[in-house]
Length: 267
Image (cartoon, rainbow, N blue to C red):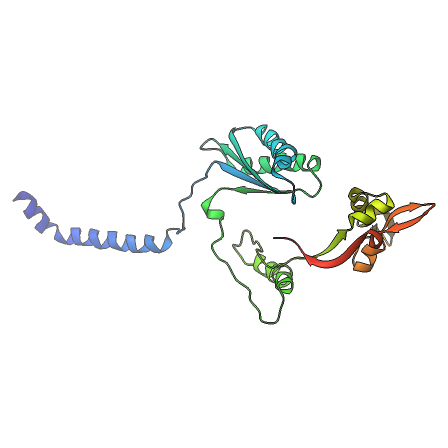
């Protein structure tokens, strides 16, 4: 009875308080931050490795194990697990809860970068945090009745990607699918044997010819210029004319032991 009387005697104050609370809730609803996932730093980093078409057992010895040893030396690492298949490997590195994952990711990336020069030539690595907030939330598909898969890839990679990267709030963009153009050299084993050459000889000749080298510096008009020698192979003719062997008996070029053609990067 006393409580009811008190409520009746202060009904205006109570009504004002309820209106004030409702108004504050409405204002807060528009100002509170909204996100798809709660802010949680998952203590896990994944290193993806790509080394072409090497067999799984060779990948394990020459790629996976060296990377595992490198990341184990990073402070705070609790557990390291890996999965290896033909040409690819994935190393999962776990840390303790509460670890600064931004710093941990940088340290893992630095450790992998230091070991990459010792891995087989052409090995590529990518370090990613396992965080639901960094996974793609939007995807675009390109189709055309007139453009080829190669043209669509070039359009996405060299025109759309720079435009989308400039959008405010975009953290990362990845081009998936399509066909990436490349020059392919198909070696004839019989011709290699006839000239006394090996596949490694052809590979070394092409690698030595396809380089960009800084040759010096030039000064003029109070400016310093870097002189660069660009001997990259840009046409099928240049690849075919690359010298593999130069001896008194004659010159052997790539076109003498292989067929050079246009192709696409295997998926």
